[in-house]
Amino acid sequence: MKEKNKIVFYVAESLYTGSGTQEWLERAVHALEKKSEITIIHGTISDHRRWTERDVADRFPSSISIVEVPYFSFFGIVFFPHILYWKSIIRSFRSARLVYMRYSVRLADPIAQFSALLFSKNVIFGFHGYFQYPFWKRIYFWLTAPIILYWASGCHTINTATGPELLSRGARRIFLIPNFVLDSFLPKKNEASYTGDLIFVGRNEYQKGVDLLAGALKKIQPGHPKIKVNFFGTGKQRPIIARLQKRFPNNIFDHGYERDKRKIFSNRKFLLLTSREEPFGLAVIEAMSYGVPVIATKTKGPMDILENGKDGILVADTTQESIAKAIEYAEGLSNSAWLEMSRHAYNKSRMRYTQRQFEEKFEQMLESLQA
Image (cartoon, rainbow, N blue to C red; front, side, top):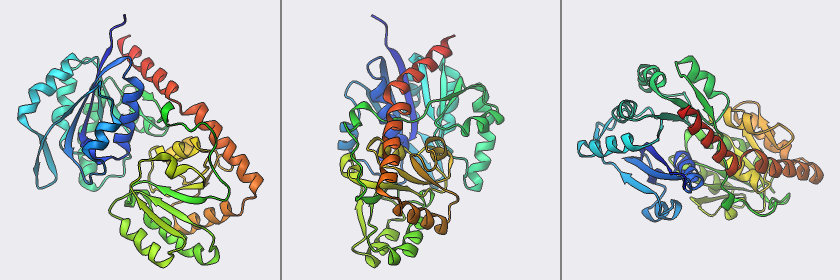
């Protein structure tokens, strides 16, 4: 019997954050657990706890080991893992065939990052984010990235645009492995509906463009009283949605955080993704797996996934005016044109973003590291 791969996933952010990183980790672990012995080491850094202990227990298989490492905080800016945990972290790094580290511009990272580079055979840094950081974070990135990228075994990216950026900063190898939908999450048939509502799914934050979408809806709602939009998510900009709902109580619905994918995506007409920056956009392929086409701003992830006019609509720029025009255009599509778009979206989700493809590409990455 082939020996299982020992893989350590290390993220400075808490699993309870419940953002895109944690959802990717959930999928990766489920896809890899049969052939791997997996340990997740995560910190206590979190801007907002969207998941409870019950959520984490339900989402991750019982066969894996999860270790939470307490962090010391200095002024809410500089973070260090508790010294009592360093020995066990290093021991985990030494025994693993692969250490996968989610790169972050937290000042907590260097201790773990350089420990992994010193004590592990293979270290992959996952770049799932974007490079539009505040000034002090950009300085930190420029200081640490060249060293990390040079000594790491490689970098994992989820879109085609990030790889060249990392290579220009000194990365030696790039492994492009897009996000995916687990087999267990896939509906058995196309469940989208031409007469369904529109939906927004994601964190209610500046990056996700909640304010842009709200502004666009204010422009078009008076002339399109039948348009209804359901918001799923939580975050700092949720009050924007509350004010919008108060203004249009029969058209705007705020559901907060929802775990049930069928409640979110079934019988919907379009997904609205209005991000200012979007490295991938997991909600895009989740919506497509239900047959729901996507209206998305022209950012890295959606540009990789969508073919404008065929399985979705790409908005030219991140302005309220352009988003409003795209929604009005989409609402004007005939039933037959929308059905064709829905069919293409459904089929693409099953051809390009599958669990099997992720498993194969991840295994190829492991094998190439041993070559």
